[in-house]
Image 1 (cartoon, rainbow, N blue to C red):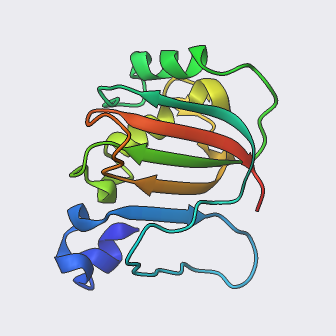
Image 2: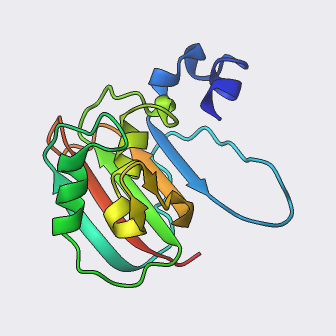
Image 3: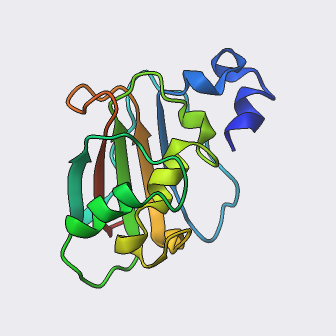
Length: 156
């Protein structure tokens, strides 16, 4: 997703590491495709209903889908309940983390580590439940090696 408009069109100086925020919402129907907007500030948070989980993980961020310390933290911090479609907000403390590596980097490992909440198993989480995703780096209230995680019922 990011490489086509950053590398291909030379947006953001041609560097995915210059991405400060990402906000995505999954929709089925017309129109198809993707809308991209360059903003001066963070995008509005997604429509979140009842909060299912909220916490700040002090790090280090997971490095792969089966990283157990992060998944154990998620498991210990939420009360089991039925989970349908969700909105996920991830706010990273590190100001230079590369959000453009969403498919392979630490953000993907964080999403994979939500499997105790979303369902599935380590390395095979049910991330299809995520209908809205918002990423932000350099969050001042989050430790530099940590991440604030909020998961709520998707209300969009």
